Image (cartoon, rainbow, N blue to C red; front, side, top):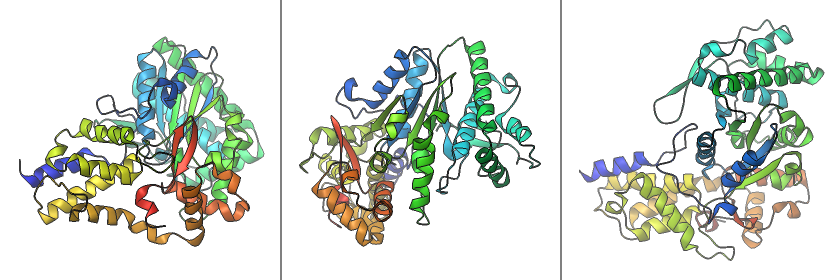
Length: 434
């Protein structure tokens, strides 16, 4: 195989983002030292041991930390244990670049995702009604829903037939939000529909416990600078009335952005349990390297592309894992950029020096977005570098401090880790630019 083909295959073996519903058993690497500290193992135990249905769980994690991979693992392991588990990618139904998310929209998304997944598994004729048509009848909507669409399901080439989405039907979305603000009838109807879908699942699968995982909610962002609107939305959905997120007939796991615990410290009190997915711990709390975490990052690549030593040696691989701070997406992006640069410059392989041009260029390209950092952003980065505790203790003015905190977490410029309790640090790639 030519060097160019080798680099191309390496590039394509490291996906830019994980696909919901994908089988990750062949490439999975656990970041936790044991099951006791494994958030997915804990979440699975909570569900298995709970004698009643209706549990509602919060699963928080940064973008690129590997959260979708972990939730895919959760669904697969629950199914192996005889539990009917279903996955819903919220980004299929919602515009996650809109910071204004209502409780009604989230429930609509969860139930639409559940129904679409059930039809995919059991057949289109197994559900006699849909949450879309029932809601239309409820508030006598004259809006014509846009036709069904096909969404990719995992990386196997399979697809999911989606009845409708809120982002494709903005007029229906407005009617839904307005109706839910003036009446509780939608929430009652949503609960009835959930019960009916759960009964259908139990009748056809003979499985008593049902779990719905709603992923991608951590990607809700405020690209136009409306962090205050985003905060108010998250507060309404996850803090003000968390009981409305529950369904009596099934368990639900909602993903959430990790800064939620920083800006709303009591948010976990409204859920059955709240677990957080830390990044791979490549850095110790004192700022030194953690070789065990770096080794686990190296293993991720080994599972996906065992020929990687033909491209770069272990020293270079370890250096990029360290610079990434243990964030899987940033790590993959560094390696993908290195592969592109090495192919364009036709360098001799393997690359053996951390100061090789391809390595330097990959790091420089990853650091380019740091030029938009504002003064408040840099001040908060310095606070995280000096003190890794929960930032809520340093918030003096929520209106002033909220935007930089959300931006830094949203762009993975501050990463969370776990040593018994959560702590935060700025990754090495970012530290040298503060």
